[in-house]
Image (tube, rainbow, N blue to C red):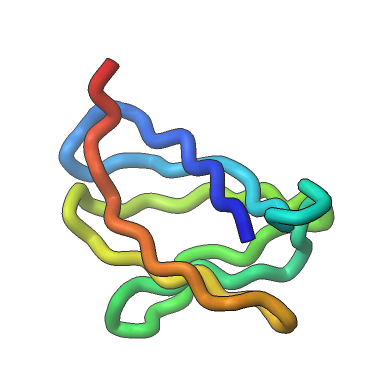
Length: 79
């Protein structure tokens, strides 16, 4: 499971990106992105894409049937 978030600069940020399989780099439709307290933030579309808002420091859980769960920490995008 590969997660490719594209966060924008801000404390409360909009996060968009896509979720693809690690092996074949195919989009994963229907993957769920949850907050640490299990609130549903987004579900990927048919192309594996998603958009939602979160706060820097939030922990996210990405789940999809047939794949291992992935835990991510929201960070500021510093270029």
